[in-house]
Length: 556
Ligand code: GLC
Ligand code: MG
Image 1: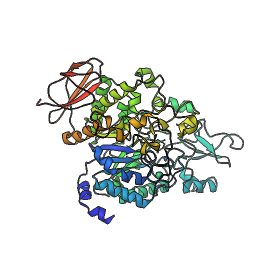
Image 2: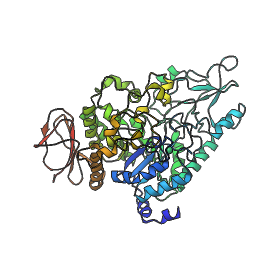
Image 3: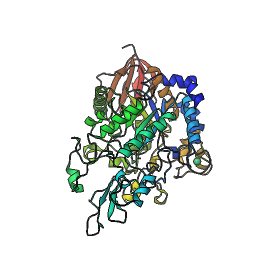
Image 4: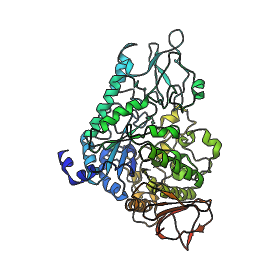
């Protein structure tokens, strides 16, 4: 650790407190990235071995999904111990080595922190089960008496986010609450011990070199459960925009993050936070305030159709909101929870009605009706080139730089996601975006590891592998590399000006004469003047083809 702190790169990294504002962040889902020890599960040493690859992409930071000890009831978001590494993934020494390698390559590290719930194997929960009703051990979680003569009925009819009941009996007339799987009991954040312990965890990883935290379900931690619980129908009828819903996005949740901010600011540069908060867009900036986590995920483009008016409104709104909060916004098209965008854009647009149904469609994992694979990738690349030119930070999810599609045909018996089991079977779940990375064109598990992949990889993974695309002009991998390298050269301040254009075209300018033009239509339009820096697809003869984005440099 001492060497690391004294190394010139570390000093260089340490110098900039604003590094996050326009960072390109690469999300690693560790179990599916690279398996170094051949146990079939990706691990921390696998990441360390791939640091040259990460470096070649031109990213600024890695966001690492949970790597803590876990039974994997929810892919690691069921944490047994917040201050250790899952033995299946390595050791704390492996973590230190990984940090050193990343920092040595000029790459920061954001770790995932899961405060809403622990796993049911966490020592606190075991203690709660072994302790009587009303005990301090139970007070760390949300226990309630069941209804009926002997508490044999749940305290309310609430449905968990993953389907099925949100309460689980413990055998003595009491039940505990879980938003997600039953292996993920919710913590009670009014409990001082809970609050203090998370501060300890934040310091633990900050001291070990983590540069920031992605905060899981940040909008869910504060709850206010009245004696007489409302029914699910009553909950559904409540608006979520006043800060007073009993379960979601309550105003006092920000008291938690104000405490976290004090810890972040103990470090130089201050540690950063980014909230996963699926809230009303108007309420997002509360999470992003400088007194709170500092930044929040903005999923608006991810939920939008490939359509210029939607893109423009969303971009303008989020830039203004983030600026108002003193923050910068975040952009993302793919992550470990949603259908990969190369496949989303291969499906017909959803229209307003489906949008009103919420984000369940994103988790469906299906490609029904049959996907337009080529068009999906074309539109995904065009959208990505917009994202990488926007002010704010941009999140790239492992494998999207290869143009990986969602794997929709995973056999039921191979599925792992609890949403599949709890729905039951109605929702295919999120395994299709979590299939292990293909590194080589052939071989067992396409180079993921010697023991095969823990989710089946489709045959197309060979031709989409890193090996197949490396150095190939026009490949999606080289397209991302060029975009990320140019982004570094071109990004200066956080301003953007709109340029009025054809109704199918989105055109904006960033400082330094950097023009970003997307033709969302299918017919070619005239290419604006300027030097062609990059494009999402082939561009010839002065025309901008349909579903294509270009970056141009021009004097105006
Ligand atoms: C977040 C994670 C998701 C997880 C859930 C419960 O939404 O991104 O993967 O299942 O929280 O922790
Ligand atoms: Mg392994």
